[in-house]
Amino acid sequence: MGEITRRWPFDNQEYGAFSLTIREPPLTGDSLGLKTWGSSYALAQLLHEFAAGPLAHLFLPGALSTPEEVLELGSGTGLLGLAAACIWKASVVLTDLPNIIPNLAHNTLLNQEAVEGRGGRAEAAALTWGGDGEDIDARFSALNRFQLIIVADPLYDDDHPALLSSAIDEQLALNLDARVLVMVPQRDETTKGLLQVLRQELAQRASPLLCVEESIVDGQDDWGEDHAGDDTPPVGFWWGIFGRAPRS
Image 1 (cartoon, rainbow, N blue to C red):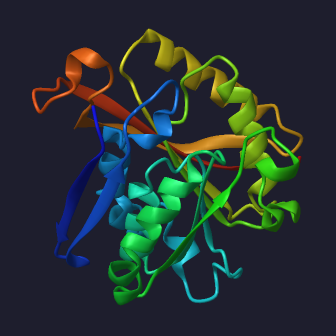
Image 2: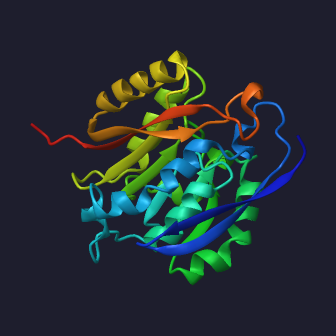
């Protein structure tokens, strides 16, 4: 499939109506970050509910205290992070592998007017899980800065749970109010197994991260060549919120 540009609408009485325009270059090799997967849209449409519910304590005045208030890991084409900037009226740093950044930066700029018009800010920066040097933007050398991390559909390979848990542990603030919001589609037994490994990896960190709330919502997934059109089967999208365990 060649390059496509898609418009993603949002409309809710809590935050009004807006849309985001997302470019997707041709999908080549294992560059899965060049495609917008269904979980990004599914999670984006729930963001206002999280801000009013289990993440409400982070949206009180002064709670998000750093200039880069929200961190997205594995941003891909940027739909989720850009939506978060709009809906939460927050500053969001969208991150991914260096080879994904040019398109991610393009989409960030493409939607700059929409984001800033709604009181948000967004920028793209390289952050490779387990990487170093040019694989990671210098801003991430100061660890444990972010009060809130978001990530959607991050698990594809056996090494991803360990790499992702390490990245989360390095970037998430150490206080008990900090949170990680994760969504993983339950598309097959492999993905379900990777999620269980991620939970184990997070729980085994020096400052353990435990799931404090979770649920599953229905959504549309277009994973695989057989599900490339609008006729996609429904999939359960698991979401979980993680926080650091109190010291005993």
